[in-house]
Image (cartoon, rainbow, N blue to C red; front, side, top):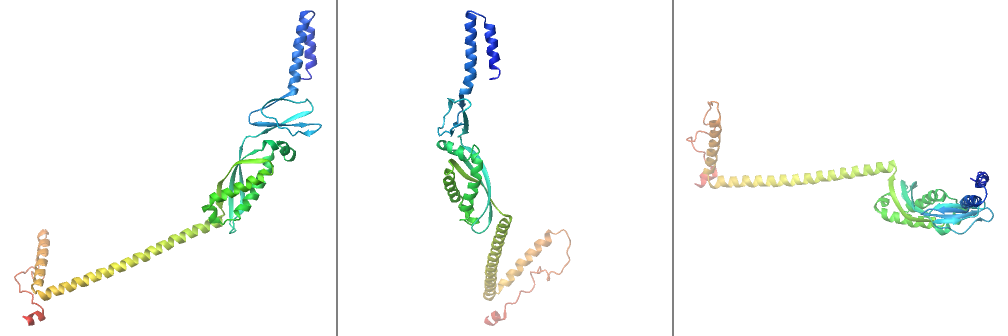
Length: 298
């Protein structure tokens, strides 16, 4: 644009001629010069951004320019634009716990620069300040906090661990002019050895629970056997008592057995030729003699 400006003005004045047209040509030429010069004098700061000025004579100025259009000195001032909106960043880290277990952590950090400290940030860190600072301070804080907890506590007390990480990281980032809007643990895992140990422990606990169940079942079976034996003994005692008190009780049992056998044979389609006495079907046979004690008493 600057190299073509003299030729453009020359062509404009040549075409303007004399009289009123000459003044019109001068006006157009002035507008062209103004448009060309204004591009060197003005710069824009977009929404969510801030600007600082680097002057080739005095260096970085301490003033921070807000959104909008601003004036600069051509060839002396160079605007440096910063994005001051919060930006997410995930940072992985490998560290050790209190019980010497290796822990894989991934931290999600939502950060932005402190507007008032933009000149200092540019002097000391440059525009890629977050790449220079955040990975190192995140690893530092994570190693300090995680070393205070064992592996189990990192899981059961995750909220407390996250709070300590956030407070420590916020303090360290403030030293570099960086503000943190949010810090959260997005991933937490342990080494293969610890995972295998946890799995083995769970298997052992399940085996112990199973053994406990087997013992309890055996105890229940033992109690059931005792109760069943006691019931059978009581039943035998009552049966003996009934026979002792009433000798006809055996005859009643014999008749009940004969009736059941007769019903089975009657329902069968086969012909049966058997001794009636052997199947207890001879109900007219001689009655069963009562026990000797009953005979003596009689």
